[in-house]
Image 1 (tube, rainbow, N blue to C red):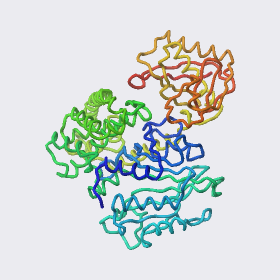
Image 2: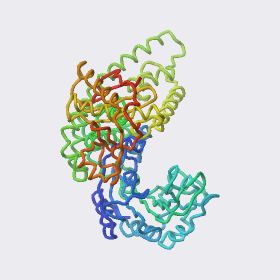
Image 3: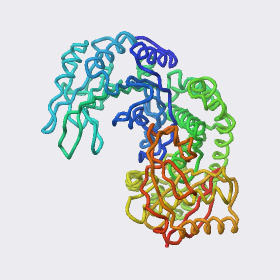
Image 4: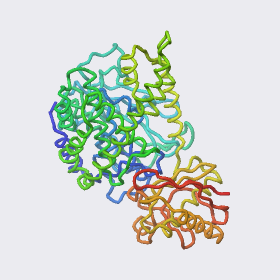
Length: 595
């Protein structure tokens, strides 16, 4: 096994694939553009989906990169040795070029010749087949031919070794694992087990089928390969026996926390957990604030997740008894020493990152003080109670409304001779997670909650509103997001001031004027380059494929868009602004309806 720094591993990955004819395509924004149904870029393959689904990539058929990703569905898991909210995927792709033989050979070569991992420590999984698709014996044979030991090749079900969307290209995948020193939990232990004996290194996805119907698959003529390996995870088992927070990516941040707190990382589990959470959450906050699309904390969507990360870091700073201005040092470390040279926008965004971070910290510290006062009110009723148990609903309200982690509530309660109904809290927390999950699944293209007739009208109206604001406020107004239901539309836009009543009236009148004119809504397919030359507006231009759809509404609006639209504006009815308010720093929000 070869010890490597993060910079050495990055270089090794790109060099390896460039020597094999791949082009380094660089990175794209971490922030979702509203067309994929997710708030962030969650996988290395996500920006390449149009090309994996058939479009030709301008840089060729063999591609590679190291792509930043953000996943926040398990924020509460951060604090152990492996979970992080920001991570980087080392990726390589074949778009209708090479397939399984080259892919399996190169994966093994990278594992053994570049990383110097011992053969007997490597394991791999292969799709076991089902009634719809046969067993992937081909990959198993090629894995063994490349060098994997026969006894370390495992066939697993579709749950573990298959990739697909609702329709279109799909296929089996084959994951690679490192066999750790931790003993297997049983003689029947496989990489599907989470006992820790096997640690996943990477995944090769073989898109060789077309899903044409439920449980019906046909072979594709043009096959693709998607490969994704986790940079942090590989660094961890190469250098630190599995703890990502001991890699050079986090080393400086941990040292700052040790110096400022007077504690050592390994003093106890409570200290270790707090340092991991702060180091992770500030790192992700730096990457989101410093992203080319500059996410800022807010109460909705991705901005809410960012706010939650910053506030969680503040809470754990209190556990370490350190002032939050320590976070500035950690910001400088991540930008100057770790990521600035790989994410060019970060170096130019340092002041913005610091300003926005400190603004959110100050806002939350005020909220936290209010929350402590609320806690005191809650426990006052226990003075004469014999049970002295804080119920789950109350402790969850402290968590959800005032940002109190359950640990803080327990500590404060214990000091006053009280206990907390943890089961009740967990039940409320579970209900909250289910609601959040349902809300996330409910996101569709263009901010639509569904795509019926009324939603289509509202979506078209957002184009008119965007155009009207440019006339009334100025050409620098740009859409920052939208959300549409059957009852109303919500539209976020860049603006540095609260709209006056006159500005709102002018905007509303202009939209209704265009509706009354019954303007035709037309669409045209064209290259992205030609679309931009034509003056079409678009959020997150880098996310769009080379061929795009441009929607024009008469002579008043021209935008790149993937959502549904009416044929003529006369179908929309009467447009009415119901509310205008702040969304986040430099972003305003309009809520409106059609009657």
